[in-house]
Length: 440
Image (cartoon, rainbow, N blue to C red; front, side, top):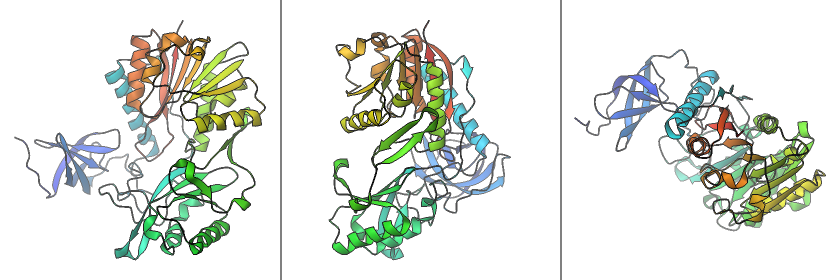
C-alpha cells in the first residue's frame, strides 16, 4: 500500500546512500531519501518534497551514528545547498563517488576498466576559484543576502562565509552583502560571478538596471579596498565590462608550471574550479596520451587551451576544437603568448559533425575529450572517422561518461584501460572522472 503524503516525523534505519549523499530509509511503502543520513544509521526525519517514486526528507535526529560521520565545518551546512557531504569523512566521500562511477559504467555502459585509478585528490577546503553567488534583497531581514541556494527551499542561504571558496573570498560574503545593501539597484542585482586568478580576483555583478554614479563609486571603493577587479554585466556575456578599466594592467591568468604554460582568461570564461587538481589532471592526461614529436593530437571541447597548450609541449601537432568562437580566439592568443607554433584552434559545433569536415580526417592518433555534462555522444559514435589509438576522456558527469564508454568499447572496439574519480569538488556530490581508452 502506498504511503499517504504526510509531514510528521518518522524513524527508520538507513540501508543505502545515493551518489549525492542522501540516505535511503527502510520504510514500508514509498522510499524516503534523507539528506545528511548515512548508511547504517537510525534516524528521525520528516518528508519535505513528494515525488512520484520517492520523497525527499529532512534529517531531524541521528540516533546511532555511522563511523564515517564527522562534524561539518561550515555553520551553514544543512541549510546551504552548495555542499552536501561535509558531514562525511573525505575518504568516505571519495568512496561514495568512486562507487557512483563504478555503478554507472556497469549499469549504463556495460563496461569495466582493466584498472581502477586511485582517486585524484587535492585541497579539501578553500579550493574553489570559480563560483556563482546568488543575491536577493530581503526586506524582512533588512539586508541583501549573498550566497548559494538553500538545500530544501528556493531561497538564498543566510550565510556569513563559505569554507570552500578560496581565501580571502571565503570571508567576504558579509562585506558583499553590505556593499549591495547600500546600492540604489540593490533589488535589481541577482548574482555575482567569482573568478580568481593568480594575479587578481574578479567579481562580475549582473545588473538589471543601470547603476547610478554613486553606485559605480561604491563598486570602485569596494574593489580598491579589497584589491579586486569589479565588472558589471548588463546583458549577455558579451556585455561584461570593468568598472575601472584604468586599474587593469594585464589579463587574468593561471599557470601550469610543469609545462611552462600561462593561460589567460576573461572573468566569465570557463576554468576548472580547483587549481591544484587541474594541474594534476593535466599532468595525468598528458602522461596517458604519451604523445611525442611524431604524434598528432586532437583536443575536442578545448575551451581556452587548458589541455591543448601543455600537449603542444610534447606532441608534433595539436588541434583544439571548441564551439564558442570567443574561447577559440582566446586559445589562439594563449598559444602565441606561450610561443607555441605547433598548435592551432578552430570553432566547430561538435554536436553536428558528419565526417565531411576536412579537419576530421587529417590523421589524429591521439585524442583528448573534455565535454560538458551532456557528454560527447556525437563524437564517439563517429570515432572511426578520427581513428585515434589512445583517448583520454575527462568527464563532469558519470552517466554520460558511462554511455560514451559503452559506445567506444561495445561499438567502436576500444578497450577501457583505466578509470577513476577526480575529487575536483570536495564536500559536494559532483563526480568528476577520467578514463583512458586504447585500440590496438
